[in-house]
Image (cartoon, rainbow, N blue to C red):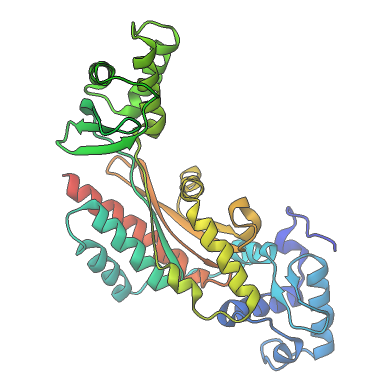
Length: 355
């Protein structure tokens, strides 16, 4: 099958091709079903015979924009076809005043705790979009004040991190084998001194350099514990992925292959670090980012789409992301502005909580 050159895009389609292509994609996004030539021939906007429509559908299929389960079936857009439609033909809708107020009311009324706010944002997006909502929590910005290690058993310890804003985090970790209580104390004192007034992310490189150059004057057990802590804390960002509405993905399944795709999607959702990395790509450009099916290796089997938008702090720094994941037949014209507006509201409310 020939492939449409990526540089040509819509310029490779004549007026008839564009009209038929648009009707097929919009029909598929509306119903989730392939669109046949008989259905299109009844469309007064096209005013074409079934034979003419079939010939054009065949040309669009040869370009890699449409596919069918067999030659006599209707057509549906490929991932490449959906990308072309979204980039060149999709007309993004405007949220109504009621929809804006609903988002503001639900997210803003979720309480003063950031976790509640972000959880509500994830649930709201999933419900409005007909998929599962995704939210990546912000990077922690507060500097540290104190670090302490507490032994729990021979194979487990608790790292207590006290931040300058008064918050405390307890993180379970597995220390190197054979670490003594005195080692835990020494490692805590070392990290408290090096991290005080700085975030883990800010101080990580300096600590790793000091350890690699043997300037820390720590014994091997203490050095191993410090390295273990830094590795397990992932730079101190302590970011999490909040997913709400997975059960919604099971609704309106049409066939066994749909169920198989959903199974793969559930497996993808378990790869939380990979999803966080994918959503971080929203930072590479302004506004909403869209990943369709095989455009990202994470969803090569489930054929899902992800719509993501970053949310920012008062300094216009990106601190997290919100999004929706679902089948490729998502209503993009509606979901894109929903995700965009929710991201803006989350950023505004988080800033209000910090002020």
